[in-house]
Length: 99
Image 1 (cartoon, rainbow, N blue to C red):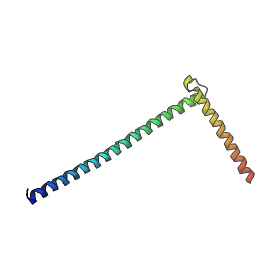
Image 2 (cartoon, rainbow, N blue to C red):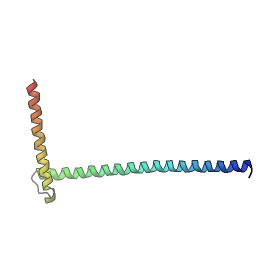
Image 3 (cartoon, rainbow, N blue to C red):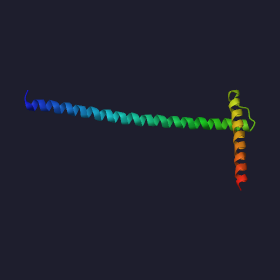
Image 4 (cartoon, rainbow, N blue to C red):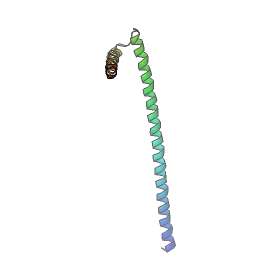
């Protein structure tokens, strides 16, 4: 094997490795983009589910019948809203006491 043949084989190996590395980098980029799209779609699903929950809760608050499976959750929301109002009143008292 001559110098030229040896050099050609080394150059081909280096070129193949560079091509392989480039393909792996492109694949990683494509996978990252796809994972980002999956996350985005998941967030959209969460937004839709939140909207459904808001609609159901508004029906509950207005006295309409809702599914028994969500009654406990709706009551928990009411309790949390009452807790928030109590905390807001405490904040107002503290602010007024400073004046």
